[in-house]
Length: 321
Image (cartoon, rainbow, N blue to C red):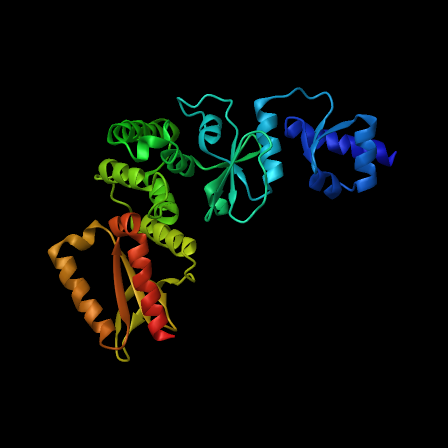
C-alpha cells in the first residue's frame, strides 16, 4: 500500500515535469534510497544519472530536457538564454536549445545542454513558466546580449554592429509585444552589468538610445537603487526618512544610513531644473553643516556607472566606521 502511494506521488510530480524526477524530490515525498533503487530495478523509473530519473513511459521531449537540466543544477537554477526566450515566446527563439543558469559555486555537469553560472540571480530575476523556473523577461534579454551568433562579434566591428541591431530589435519587441518595462531592464543592467561581462556594453548602448524619453518615477528610481545595493552587497539603508538639524526639520531624504550619517538622494529629471538645483544645494548644505555626507545619483549613473557610485557609498560608509 505504501509503495503504491509513493508511486502515485512520483507520478504526480513527474506529470508536472514532463516525466523528470530528482532523487531529492522522491526523498522529500517519503521515499528511501532502498525504495528508489527498487523502483529502478522494477523499471518504474529510469536513471539518467546519479540523483536524476525519468518515469518510464514518458517520451523524450525538449521540456523534459529542460526539467532534467534544472533539477540537476539545483533549486536556485533557472532556464535561461535562448531556451528562456523560447519559453517567453519571443520571436526568433524556437524551442530546442537547452540552457540553464545557476549561481556560481556549484559543480554540476550538463545533462542535456549548457549550464551558465552567474554571481547574481536573486529570486525576482526568476519567473515560473508552466512550472519551470525561468529567467525573467528582462534578465533573459540581458543574457541574450552576451550570446551573439558568432563569438567574434565582440572583436569584429561589423559582426558587433549586426548583433547590436538584433538586440535593439529584441528589446523593442519585448517592450512592445511582451510588456517589459524599461525599468525592468534598467534594474537588471545596473545590478548584473559589470565591466568585461559579455553583452553589458551592448545593452547599455541600447538603453541609452531607446531610453532617452523614459522618465522614471521616484518609486522606480528607488527600486533601481535598492537593486544595485543588493547586488553589490551593500546593507540596505532606511528609506524615505524625515531628517533635520537640532532646531528644525530640513526635509525627507530618499535613503539614509543613520549610524554612518550618510544620505543618498536618487535624482529624477525634476532635479535638473534651476530652482530645484538651487533648493537641493541649500538642503545639502544644511545637512552637511551638521555632519551628514550627501551623495546624489541619477538614473543614468546607476545604469551606466554603478561601480563608480557604489564605490563612493562604500567610501563614505567606511569613513564613518
